[in-house]
Image (tube, rainbow, N blue to C red):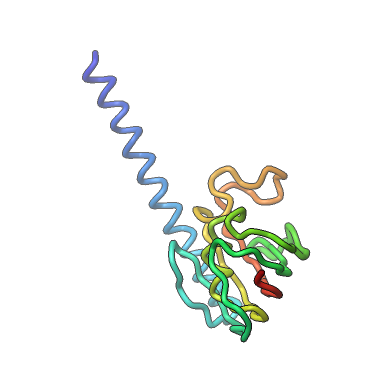
Length: 148
């Protein structure tokens, strides 16, 4: 009896690992297709992030711990906008991991596009508001206005 319970738990555990690998692979395929469809010159970054530097900026650099002012537009790969606006006096450490990795690719005054896989976006839960579904690849157009 104990052996069969252990076997079931092991199968569930291995199945969960396979799903995560499959989601990462799926997200990468979606991102690469989006890049091809929109003729983007994207760079592969850490943790599955892809980014486009339209303007690198000439001001101060930032890090994942910086406080920043930025404008952004966030949308799904189908073009549906889920949020846009300006954040000010905002610590990147309070943002999704995709922003913590992506925003420092620009210096103050820089702008570009972040293509964020679900694992470093809103994950398998999606956003609390429901505007970002579970396991969604998300895109952000960002401009880094100020680094404090």
